[in-house]
Image (cartoon, rainbow, N blue to C red):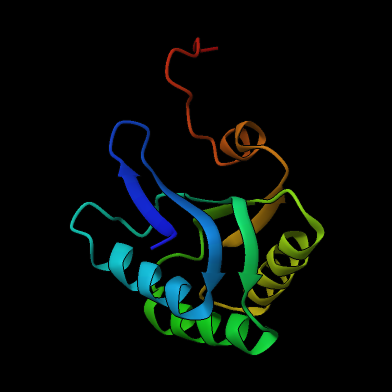
Length: 134
């Protein structure tokens, strides 16, 4: 499967990475998997990195389907943050549509779109390993 997640217990965030061809079914499957993970807590931030995806096979209807499931399953996520890291126009459009749908929801987290993981991690307030405290 070209999409996988890791819950970083030290830095407290969900790190989702996708590669190759990414489909609606894979998005739904990974979403269901990390929500059921015993290490997951609804308030921790989520970083989704799509920079290694070469084909995004997700239609507008697919995005709406993913968000319908998310809205039913995401109680307590409104105050959490989610970042999507993208590097091409198709990914940017997907990420912006995702952010717009989240903005319209009373249950879903704020989503922001970034060109780099570093910028996304800063916005998510995830402390980098070895970073100095201010």
